[in-house]
Length: 247
Image (cartoon, rainbow, N blue to C red; front, top):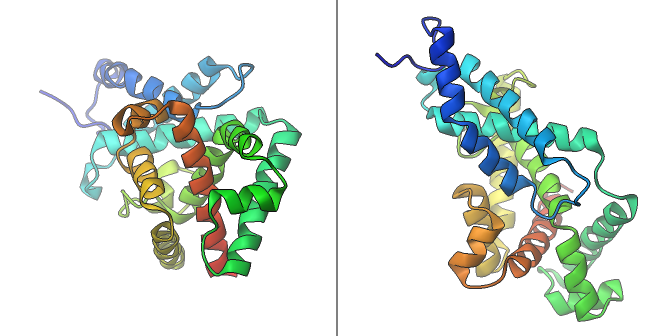
């Protein structure tokens, strides 16, 4: 008889079996998050963090909340992996500075133009050639992922509204937080609506369908490198659109 994860009736053997059955999900999530990370980042450390998140999911899962275990576990894994990535301080200061410059440039142009700027307009605003701008987008892929994950955590996971922020075990739920999160999700949805169709598609495939950037490239018939560029620019535009609404 199968015992539900999180059940007090679950034996140690059943617990270990559930963890073993979902280890590949941890590795897949690391592959998604680690796109564009420098070689010095130890992926084994990220996998270990993801397994810790999986173990927490097994112990804390409540089937009465309406979410599937795999969805809940993925959210817990991702939170643990992102926490580990933040503690590594993996991004060189120069790269973080470049990404902030990208976001600031897009925000300035959006305010000036009253719309989301085009690629060429952003490159000119930053004083970069098209080739230099494309390289910046490729280099900043992982920084963009960390950036948007922080927003997702603040808003709660839109795919699991019944669990809200407390699914990670880091935040206690309360009615005021739920209202704030719902408003932030609404503003995020509006900001996503400003993106180009291709950017919206990439965002949807990555965050809703949970494909890797490489898999998205295969779906759209373009290189992974190009998907990295589209994703990074979309996240910078998305944050500019969100902060304009919050400001």
